[in-house]
Length: 206
Image 1: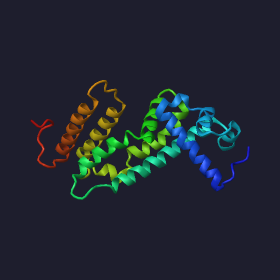
Image 2: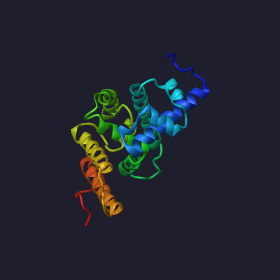
Image 3: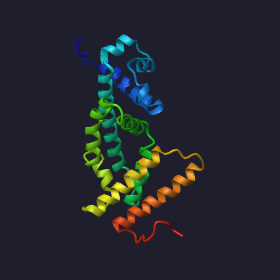
Image 4: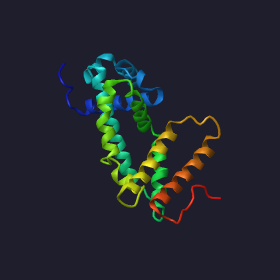
């Protein structure tokens, strides 16, 4: 099949397809992502879907690229959103926690889970994972979590990042807001301690 023509209408339809695919993954998981399901969600015919994405593999590759672009955009916006006078590290922690609730980040987490047993997803997702882990996207944002270079500052960033990502995937069955709030405060204090900022000397403020 010939490549779809690059027209404004075609670009809009393709964007709708990718946005809906991300929402579908975030709501229901990767396994429900099929060309037919996305076509139904967007409200286009199966033929129109085939015109843009001939195979599920092509759709998955495009969705991952779309998610990566959207995550990068959200990180750039977060970097620019620091209110004057606010603590940089605490702002980064609070903002990343908020970002992790967004559909594009939820979908990325769902794809990471799927990658454990799906070779195609693992291969397509690996560059995006490495790009983020090495700070090539979200770099300026994640640097707000630490105040220098070296293993200790790397550890402060990793501690905050991986604890927040784990919390985002956890199932808080009761008192979610209160428990999350307490954990966020502990993460902030631990990060300050590793960065040796603000005179913080303990994880729990009595």
